Each structure stands twice: as structure tokens, then as C-alpha cells.
Length: 322
Picture 1 (cartoon, rainbow, N blue to C red):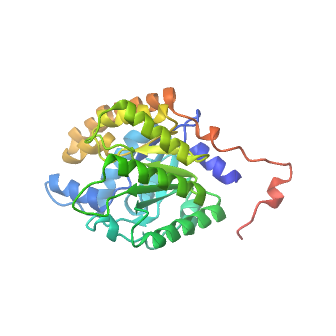
Picture 2: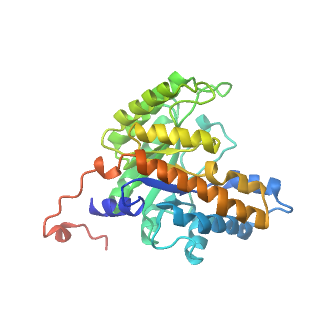
Picture 3: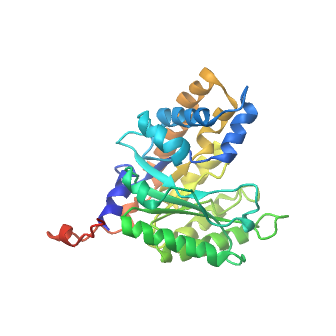
């Protein structure tokens, strides 16, 4: 629909590439900040950290992914998220204390797709730990369908982030399993109606550094996505590893990156001027480097999503939600 097309344009560069700053982390990020802080941060202090990082880096990005409580409200009010920057909001509560197999779909209380649209948001994100053979897989599929329907009603893009995991908490997925599940997820959720897939790299670099295998795996993911664009998430790897992953993924058909900790993670352990200096120099240079990688290698999202077929009377048929 025409609204989704417009919002995707606002979330990407003029060339159609996603260079999106992710800072929607909540409990796990606050815990990390408090481990390094002279005294524990309250909500205002946590929000101030996010706002400062966003203010410095947002101008280098095509969009910002941040949460409503600590990121969106303060970021808009402080003009850290300007009208020239796309804005994506998450809808899930994530409990990292539980193994992914035990996590259910939990929605942020008092928050919705409609509210993201009303505050000028350009996308809706759902993080979804996923295994096709898990006991709660039907519940998770129902959650995806719920957001697909709501995003269609509000005409706003759905950025789905399905994360593969092992059913055995004592071991990680092998690379063969990781690729198999990632391809299956991409195929399933593309067919289900996700507008953009935010995906992990389909090879664990701790198990293999074979770049030809990396390229083959990313090409398989692109094929599984079909007409749905995908963007690479950083999953907490170091920046140099992520930069190489991003280059290979984009060469294989990805439309860009949605990146958080690989850009700003070291700032968590710093304080005051040292933190600002790191974000303004190292973190900024990292996002610029990723933007260059995307500009040179990524597939524009509009090469996969056809432009709306707009007749002169399109607006008369466009649904009014009043």
C-alpha cells in the first residue's frame, strides 16, 4: 500500500538502503550500564543515555529503532530524532532471563501499532525467538499474524526479527541447523506478510570463517525471502566481524543493516566526556563505514517491492480509519 511505500522510503537512504541505528534494548542494556556506572541509573538517566547516543548518531543513519519509554518520547522532545530521520518502534517485551524456548509473545503495555503510526513512526518491529519445532510455535505465529493485520490496517511497514535458537539449552545450533532454520523462517514469514525481515547472519563466525560458505548461506537467505527485503542485524559481534558480514550479506542480496551494539557497545562502559567522545568519533565512523558498505553493495528495497499502482482516484478508495 502507498503508506507502507512512503514509510519505507523514510527508513532508507535515497538509494533505497537501510542504515538503521538500533537502540531499543531495555533491561539488558540498563543492567550493563549499571555495572559500569558509579551509581545505578534511574529511568531518567537511562533515557538520557539513549537520547545522547541517538542525538550524535541519528544524522548518520536512515532511521532509528528505539523503544517508547526511554527512547521515542525523549528523543522526539529533545529533537534527537528529527523529522528527517525514520523512526521504528518495537512492540514486544523481551525477557532475557528465560531460555528462548520459554519466551512467549508479550506486548508492551499501553503501546500499539496504531500509536506508533500516530506519533509519526515509520515502522513496527517484533523480536521473535523462533524454532519451527518448538511447543509454542503456533502462539508465535498467531502473534505475527496479529501484527501483520494491524500493520496492514494502519498502512505501516512490519519489520519482523525472527531469531533462531536451539531447543537444547545446553548447546548452540550448528551452522547447518542455523542456516536451515533461518531459510525456513525467511520463507514462512515472507509468505505470511512481513514487509522487511531483520535477520541474523546465517553462519556462526565462531564455527566458520569460510567466506565462500558465508556468501552461499546469505544467497540462500535472499532466495528464501523472495520479494521481501531483508536487513542484517549485528547480534552483538565485534564491529570488524559485522562489517565483513554486512559486506557479504549485501553482496548476496540484503538491503542494508539494522545495527546496535556493534556500533555503540563500548560506550556503555564509559562515562561523561569519554563516552561522548567515543560516540562522536569511533561510533560515528563505524556507522559511516557501514553506510558506505551498503551504498556499494546492497540491493535497494524498492527493487523487491513494486511501487503502488496509483490511479488518479486512489485516495477515494484509500480506507479512512475514522
